[in-house]
Image 1 (cartoon, rainbow, N blue to C red):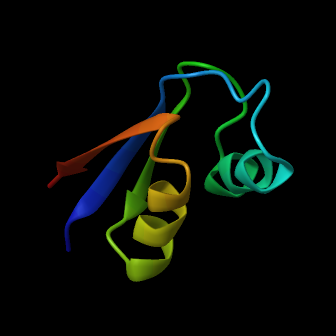
Image 2 (image 1 turned 180 degrees about the vertical axis):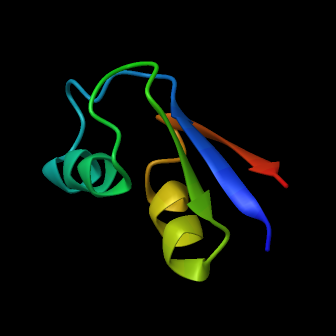
Length: 60
């Protein structure tokens, strides 16, 4: 199954509380953090919510 590499590229300072909570749920705590998650609709949706703060790459 494919996996997603999600990296926080911008600060969450000044963003909505919902976006902060989404970053925390993904496991991203500070700028430059990276997590690898399964390619599932739940994680894609979360990444889409904070797409202006993260970059998403597909990895095998």
